[in-house]
Amino acid sequence: MEIVLSGIRPTGNLHLGNYFGALQNFIKMQQEHCCYFFIADLHSLTTHPKSADFHENVKNVLAEYLAAGLDPEVATIYIQSDVPEVSELYVLLNMLAYQGELERTTSFKDKVRKHSDNVNAGLLTYPVLMAADILIHRAAKVPVGKDQEQHLEMTRTFARRFNNLYGVEVFPEPTAFNFGNELVKIPGLDGSGKMGKSEGNGIFLVDDEKTVTKKIMHALTDSGPTAPNSPMPEPIRNIFTLLEVVSTPGMVAYFREKYNDCSIRYGDLKKQLAADTWKKIAPIHERIAEIKANNVYLRKVTQSGALKARESAQATLKEVKKAIGFRAF
Image (tube, rainbow, N blue to C red; front, side):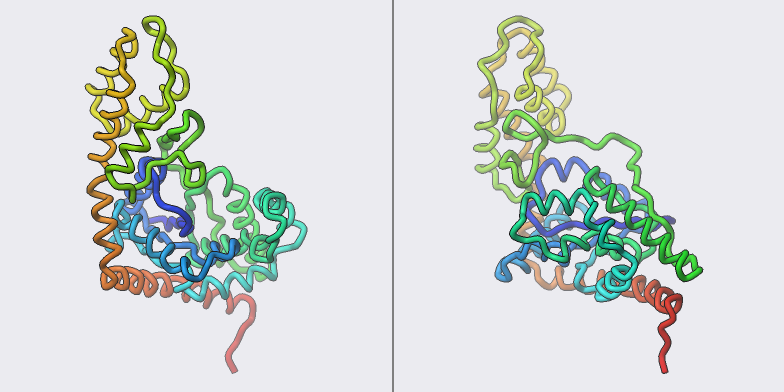
């Protein structure tokens, strides 16, 4: 069974795009592979989060992913900083990473351009820490988005460089995990693009019913179709895409017919979308609150995950240090 690893940054809340997109594949993936899921709290330090918010952010994202379906009885779920072997491997891999290749990464250049007042070493060596996350468990597959493909290629480079330098085969060269199907793309409520954490166009799993309804009722629409079977403009098409995800096929067909014969009332469409959306996320919303209030359960999950993750990490680090030449006197 292949080892699959995925990291989750503790920034922002889960929205419908996360839940109906990659997370559904993670839930399926954990049943079919040996999966490690971790909360990437060390990575988040590059943005200097306030210490008062730091722990709460980790707790929030952990509770949301557990409520949404990640199973600590099946997968290994842990917090990055609970596994010090990751940091140790990060130091060792930094000795094999060169300034020029790190400065050429697209993500680093973007960060320098957007945040010129905070160009820290952690940003520069971000791909090395990501490589340590992956290689510490000798993962074979990593689910990555387009923005992370270059980092995964650098992980392959570091693995190959280490193996060649020390004449060993400690690290496999990981590849991108192919879910085997097109990820569901959930549009935002602002009429264009996709739902995102920072765009202000999302419905979040922690939103209550009143908030969900208010957001959907304010979603962008137009004045309505002017002729039978008119093409849908993007904002209306987006609303129907959301409806297809949360409603029954019959309900979708009903409103499509209303649109095509020009009798649609967007207020009715939005009310139905709001009701069906809440019906989908209400159980998760309630579960998030229950998990967040249960510190005993969260402690059990994180301690158990750290033990399993450290067992794997220590085995890898032992081989790494042996290859390099570390010896006890």
